[in-house]
Image (tube, rainbow, N blue to C red; front, side):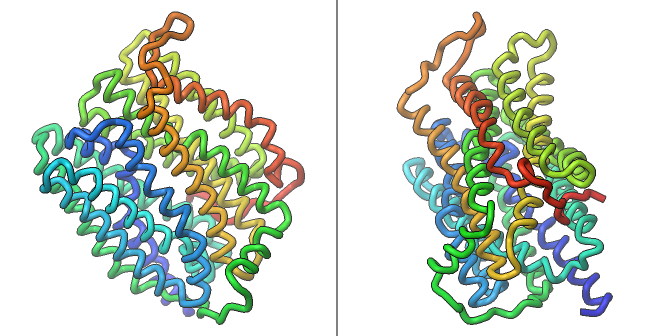
Length: 427
C-alpha cells in the first residue's frame, strides 16, 4: 500500500469503530439497563439478558475466526455487521409488542448482536495488523480506543440530557434508533478497509488447528487466567447499576450518568495502562489491576461509611473500576499479541477472546441465577452495615479475586520478561 492508501485505510478504521462503538457501550454504561427497567423487566432477568451477548461470542468466536482465515475476514465481518444491526433493531421492536414478548424478543436480539460481534471482532485485529505500519501501531491503536470511546461518552451525555428532559419510552426508542442508524453507517465505512492478507485453503481441520494454537507455549495458561479474572469481575458494572436502581433508588438518568463514568475511567485506563505497559511491562500492570479489582469491590461494600453524598462515592468507584478494567484489557491484549504465532492469527486471537467472552457471559449468567433462586439473603448485614443480595455477589467476587492471587503465575510475563506489544500507547 502507498502512504496515501494507508492513511485512508486508517481513517476508515477509526470511523468504523467510532460510528458503531455506541452500540457496544450501551451494554455497560447503564443505557440498556435503564431501558429494560423502563419496560419493567426484573433485575435478575436483566442480568441474564446482558450476559447473552458474551455467551454468544463464547460459542461462535472460534468457528468464525477459523472461517475468517478460509473465506476472508471481511466476508465474515460483513455478515456480522448486518447480524449485529438486525439484533439491535429487535431491541426496539420488542418495546412495541405485548409485555409477554419482551424477554424472548430482546433475548433473540442480544444473541444476534453477540453472534454478529463474534464474526466481526474475531478477525478485527488480524484484519488491521498488516495495514498499520509497525512504527505507528502503538499510537494508532491508542488513538483508536480513545476516539471511539470519547465519542460514546459525548453521545451518552447528550442522551442523558434528553432523558432528563423527556423521560418516556418514545425517547428510549429514539435513542436506540439513532444508535441503529450509526450501526448501518458503520457498514459503509467498513467496506473501505482493505483486506491485505488473502484467504488461504485450510491445511488442517478446525480441531487440529485449534490443537496447534493450544500448544503455543504458555498461551492456554494465560487464557485461563483471563477467563477466571473475567468470570469474577465482568458482571460487576451491571451489579453496580442494579444496586443503584434497587438499593440506592437512583433515577434512571443518574444510573446512565454513573455508567458513563465507567467509560470515562476506561479512557484514563488506556492512558495510564499504556504508559505502565511501555515503561514497566505487563507484569506490574496485571498486579496493579488484580489487587485494584479486589480493593474497589470491597470499598463498594463499605459505601455506607462514606460521609458525603453516596452518589459521589459510587461514581468515583465506578470510574476507578473502568480505569482498572481498561488497563487490564490493554495488558491482556499486549500479552496475547506477544504470544500468538504468525500463522492462524485469527484463530489464535479468537481463542483468547472466546475464553474472555466465556468468563464475561458466565459472570452475568451465574449472577442472574443466584438472584433468581434467592441463594443470597436480600437483607443481611456485615460489620453492622446493611447489605443486599447484590452486595453478597460483590463479596463473593471480591473474595475470589483475592484467592486468585495464586493464579498470577499463569501469566508468562510474571515468571519471565516479556516485551510489551504494540497496542498500549495512548498518544
